[in-house]
Amino acid sequence: MILLSIVVPTHNRAACAVQTIHTLLALPENVQIVVCDSSPIDEIGQFFLGLYPESRLKLIRSKEGISVVDNFNLGLSACDGEYLVFIGDDDFVTKDIVRVATWASLNKVDSLKFNFSALYYWHDYMHASRGDSYSGTLHVSPFTGAVISHNVSKSISYALDNFGGGVFDMPRAYAGMISSSLAAHIVNKYGALFGGVSPDIYSSFLIANEARNCKWIDYPVIIPGASGLSTTGQSNAGGHYGKLRDNPHIAPFKELVWDSRIPEFYSVPTVWSYSLLKAVERVEHVSGRKFFPNFGRLILKCVVYHPRSYHENVFALKKLYAELGIWKLSMQVLASVGNEFLWGASRIVNRIKARYIKKEVDVVSDVATSLEASEAFELYLLNKEIKLNLP
Image (cartoon, one colour):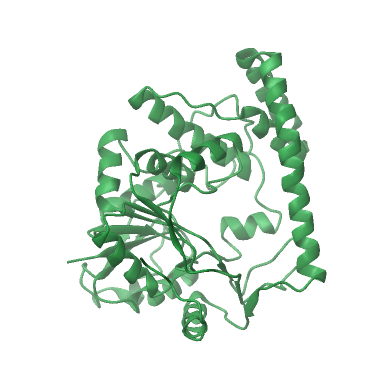
């Protein structure tokens, strides 16, 4: 029986994916790896074809021009495990992920939210202000090993209020874990687990609405990676911005109808807010419930952080004015100013601390790939006093 399926969607990043697949193959035999490759040229198969049964490794070549959302849904349809994890092709997991899935199965846990206390930066990672100082390093922040029940309703409210800010504390399939039964339930109810143009935040909202037994784990089980070609790497290098329809991430969405209340340019807040909005609308349509995303907070983000998109911001602002009215929209924006200011101030403080104040962060250096980082991190955890405390 396959306990866990780990899905790795990838596109034109074989150098990362091959290394990450090797790290996953070091896990026990009851873990299945599903690789969904939408690259025009197969540069992965040569390393693995014919070496493993499909219960161990599935290599799926998706059709040319498929979107990232369709690629994720394709991976989901190929899974055979009782539990499911989606990771990026530059991420890796620790061996404790098998213990977690086993424990979750015994305790009927349907979703798990992990605290990302460890982050890995590939050798080609570049920061907009710090250059290559993070390249080839693994950064580990303090963690407790605790496992607690997670309030998914609170996580939904926070994500809707900080509209365009991210997934935050909602449970996840991408860099999280859910049961295959929960995934099947969501597909049956809503048509698909992944949607919008950002599969992680869309699926998180559906999972948060349907999960009945969600746990939060404060231990490095899934380690997000940032390579030079990843969205994280591009964002931190200052390149995750531009015309919406010209972006290669958006181009495969041939029939995309953008919501006019969201400024039409490519950026982190616009892509996330659009995808979250699509999930909200889907849940509202099926369940009849009503949610209220904070459009004022989104507009504030776009105006402050992306002033070059003046015309797109003004157009969306006019649409929101017509729908919400000047009083409601103004109150949303004004109420968001303080929160956004505190968020910006916290980032500045964290940067100052990172440069001038010694923090309780362990750094493992000289790890060029996820395979090297995975091996080094297992040794690090072996010598760490704090262990994962599954109740």
